Length: 515
Image (cartoon, rainbow, N blue to C red; front, side, top):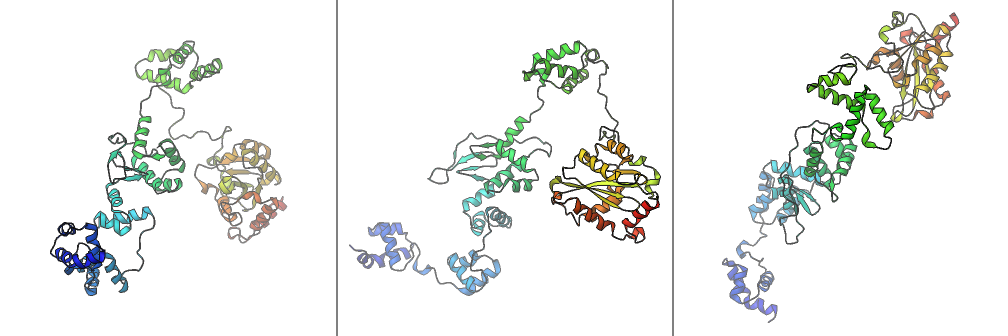
């Protein structure tokens, strides 16, 4: 029998059964028709499958939809009030200008998740919030439970890894042993926490760059790079497994080298018996066993082993082992005392004569470097304290101690002897050869206190003026000696209020001609 004949013969009876509340499945059995044929007949006679005639969708009350939407702000609530579909209610609201024609969805997975969390916090269900941000309700449930999807697996907050590759649906086939999450003990902020590792995994899941992830958790990008490289398993980074591995590797205490290596310990004990110092033992072992890496030990390791024994009550053995006989380590410097910055002792600014401070006597200079991009290039600056006269040092071969020394000697020797009184500099490494500068120019060199730029106020102010000509972050090697001389002449030709509107060049000229 043809489809048209079935519609004529069974259409009215099928419609009567469905309107009476009989399911399409039961009606098909009663009429002796396949269920698919019943659905086709219902569609052909204009009755949506499974819905009675009296409740057929489409009779939308525009006023009710607009009113409900104004009150609730929800398209779903407006559609339910008139028993119409979500899309039908949306079309009405678009026509009224209450809803944009294009559905606005957050761009990117991270933005969608942020919006999803906001909606759930406002009381929305996970399914409704998921539909609102344009993701599958299953994804919304995973977000709400803290489950991360990695490839074909889902990683639960407790560390379980569940495989969902079976095509039959949302199954829970565990591919790895279920293990309890190991919570790491409180460690220093220098180390990655479990929260940091979860943030790294989330960033990798949405394909963020390592630099972006590092900025997000406040760590260096190299830290994130090493973490991902060390703890990626089968191409995936699993944060809880990584945290357990890091905690195991960080376990303390570890056995000391002299405890685990009996041969090395015997060699050290023999050296101590022969009254050798730990430093002598360390270097002699390297000489006697050049090809045996296991026979290496630093003198600090030996000292630590000896003083550890002393704290355990073996003071007699320590007294016999060390010629000083001390049972406790002696600090090498006083509390608050700084190590010497250079091999040659520094003369600090506190020892500078008072005549230099009041600027009454000319010939006392302040110096510094201004550096370019990545501190690879530099220009030396010298400012005379009383006249504010500026000289710029060309450093084409770098700004190491030797290059700065040579440039300073050449510049200062060009000045008359009575204008070579002293030089004040900060404690930068470029002044490591300060004693040679002092001997070659017959000038005393003084050093400022650490982090005290105001002690060279004239020089710091001049460096600020020079940045107009040499901006920060630029390559200073492109400026030749002629360029530096031109800039210095411009600065020295500016009238200064502190000089009674004289220029530094005029003041220096008067000092030179007066002698």
